[in-house]
Image (tube, rainbow, N blue to C red; front, side):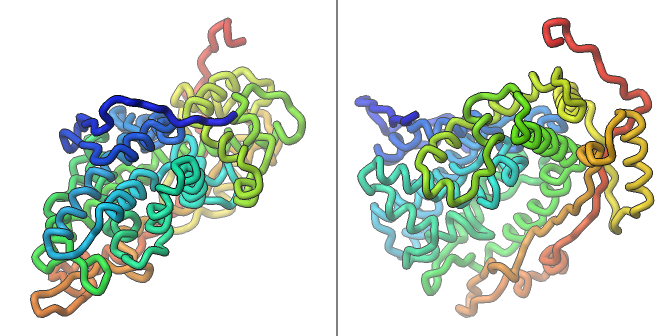
Length: 428
């Protein structure tokens, strides 16, 4: 299926009314055209926070909301940096706005939850590059500079840092936006002040010294949002159940079992799609562009009545919100405990030990609010010295937050008072 961009002869310098920032304007016509493209419109059908609404009912906002907000913050950051005497051409501004607008276009259904199960060994950032390359061809090379900025091959490194770094417009928006929609006020940050404190030294993004307390709050907010929202244990349990359901469907499909699925989902269930497949066959990207949350949810609703016990049980539990119990520990869970739980699953669900593996999940949760080993948030002091925020801060907690925290979890179904509900006759 060949996707065509829309043609609109009306005024393209529109405004959006955003619940977080108020009015967001579209400064250039090409940005409007890219927003209207089917590739971008697909982001309306991908929730920003996966299954988080099972815990926070308001978390129903989409990737589309997020990228528009990040674009708005990018325009403010560019205005600030220009005002401080740094040259950013109109062409560079347009490219930076397009780069941040398209930074999440490679996300699949339910955002991060299924990132490594829909496709194999290819990240959403890589798929975003494939999308930007395709769009640039459609728009006669007008997105080539945006692609350079996105890939960090353009000489002005600070433009890439505004798109992807530890102090980028992506994080600025998602902390404020996810905080707003979940109602978790601890995630709210002073993005206006942080942006106002931005500057460029030696071609790299820095923050002026007087912005240090805003950065401290930013790092603390990120740590709290991870524990309270992104790594909330019930959210983790739900998302791993979704992962297990998809993996089971893929197993069955590749063994020749007939399963309900949309054409796009069917393709990714039948095939283990890699980065090379995206590069060698243009139709793979087009199929991916037709895949969103609706495909997965529609399939899971039907899979509730499948004859395969593993797939039907997982699907029912997701739809009915009968989620797995989850335990979190500072140390790994014993083999004896896992073995005992597996035996209970085998007995109660009448499954083989191999099938029971889909119902017992153990892994690690890692919260790394600030990774100074990967990249620094640098402050420019009044003396002109450039130092890392952890060394400049008089708040000892910031240095502690630079150390990743790991916790182990074990998730599994419980059976007492957990009886399945009857499906409607039409589903049987």
